Length: 200
Image 1 (spheres, rainbow, N blue to C red):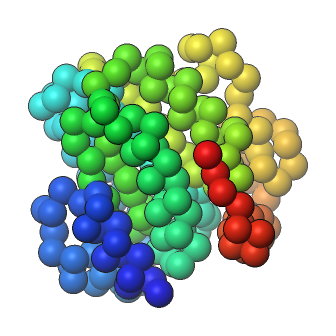
Image 2: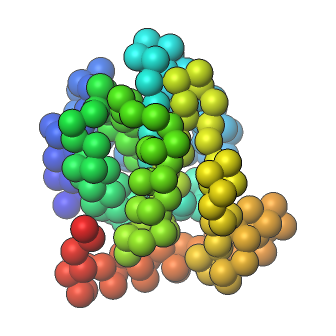
């Protein structure tokens, strides 16, 4: 099942810079914390190059999965669902899209021909109102490479999906253990599958 999802995401969204077998190998690899930090640096560098090339807004979507085991059937499925919804939302404005697997987990990247403020409003709505939206981080960057926050748009900070307090403060103070966060995401995924919830 996992490999089929990878192949599906590869065929639909990959920029084809990798062979699908390479993505599968990266999915199966065992990572350590240093790998996650290195992958983050590589992703930021690549995002900067894409923004410089297209001079447009960029979306990066990742699952909020804790620890170093970020590549699993749950994160793959969540990315598959959310990526397809984002593509549909921006279908006439997509300049570039890609799917990759790294130590950070499955990652979707899109370059959008739209003002960053408009892109951010739409992605915040997805995070808040889709059943699986709370399981992902959808980061938005402007054509100068600057990130845009909810506060800049006068929107409320994101709430922690475990306790409903500020998500930032929970991360900063490490209020919740890995198992607690994993359990929330796993339950969310299972409920989505069980009840065949259709995000629109």
